[in-house]
Image (cartoon, rainbow, N blue to C red; front, side, top):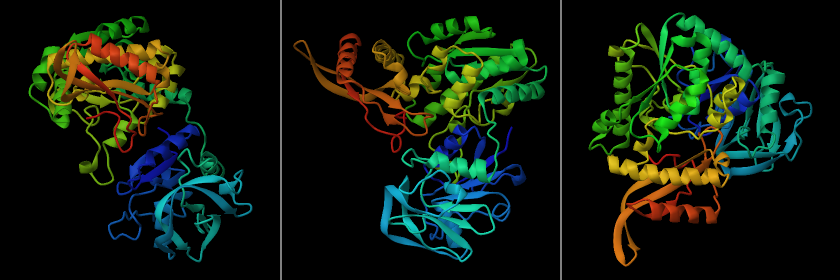
Length: 509
C-alpha cells in the first residue's frame, strides 16, 4: 500500500473531509489518532495536522509528539494544528475578541508564497475557531491574513512547515483544493498516483500474495462494498472465493431473491442461505441498538462458521469494510467515544479459525464505486444506495418482531420504488423508512385507529461522513404518504426527517 500522506486526527469533525480532499487529488493518505503514531514515519512524504474541538491553551488539549516530523517532512497545520505549533514554539494564542465562524476572505497574501500559488486576495475561506494566533514566534513568517485574523497563515523559516487557521477541506473554502494541491504536489512533491486502475492492480497483486491457493469465504450483501470486494477477490483467486449471501430476515422486500438473481451473470460462486429464524430468535426481546448490532454480528459469525465448515480448507473470511467504518470505530479518545460499533470491523472469535481479509478497508464509498466501474461492474449495481449491515433491525426502533419487519418492508418498498418512478433515486445518497415505537391516533372511515408512525429519510452525501436531508418534492411526499397509509396495514401516519449529519446520524439507531 502506498504511504504518501499522514493525517493526524485531534478529534475534529472535519478530519475525514481532509482525507477525502487529498484522495480527490489522486494522492493516498491515512488518518491516525495523534496519540497513536505509525511506527515508521519515514514512509510518509507529508503530514497534515487536523483541527480539534480543544483549545491548545487547555491543559487537557492533545499534545502531539512532532519531534520526528517537524522540519523533516513537509507539515501543514490546520486550525488547531496551526495554533498548537504557534503556541508550542513561542507565539501567543488567546481567545479572540472577534470569534470567527463561517465565511471570511483573505485580505493579504505574501508575494511569491508557493502555498498560495494561483490563489488571489479576497478568496473565500471557512473559519471555525474561537481562539486566534495573536503573535507568531520570531522564526515564523506571516503569509496570509483576513480582515479579522492577522495571522491566518504562516510559514516556519528554513522548513516546509506551514500553519493555516482556516479549513481548506470544506466546500466553502473556494480555493481549498488548490491550497492542498500546492502543499502536497508543489511543496511536498507527492506523486498523484492513487487511481482506481492503480488500486485494482496493486490490490489484486497483494491478494494473490497474501491468500495464495487458500480458500476465502465472503459474505455478500448485494450492496456496492461487498460486490466490489467480491470482484477484486475473484480477479485474484477465481473459484477459490466462496460467496455466501445470508437472508437475515431484515433485508428489504424480496431482496434475497433479487440479489441472488443479480449475481448470476457475474461469474461469482454464490450460495444463498436463509437464516431468518436464527436471527429473529437472537433478536427476541432486544431493544437496545448496540445489543441488536452485537446479536446480529454474533449470528452472522455463527452462520459463516457453519458455512465455513462446509468449505474444505477455508482459511480467510473476506469483508466489505470501508474506511468510514474503520474511522468511526477508532477514536482519539478511545473506544468510549466511538459513534457506534461495526460488526464488520475488527477480528473474529478464535473458534472460527479464519483470518480476516478486507480489500476495501482504506477506501471511501465514492472510491469504491470508481474502483467498481474500473472493473466493469454494472452501473445499476454500483448506484445502489448504502444499506446498513444490521438491516432493518436498526430502522425498527425498539424490539424486533416479524410483523414489524413486514410493515417496514412494505413501507420501504413503496418509498424506494417511488423514488425510482419519479427519477429521484440517483439524486439521493441513501433513503429508507424508520418504524417508530409510537401509536398515533387516526381516523379511517368512521373509526378511530391507533397505529404506527413511520419516518421517511433521504439524504445527500458523498461518503456518508457528513450528510444533508434532501428537499424532495411535496407532491412526491404527498403521493408516497397516501400510498403507505392506504396500502400498509398498521400505519396511519407518515413524517419526513429533515435532520442533517452532524449533528444527527443518517440512521436513527
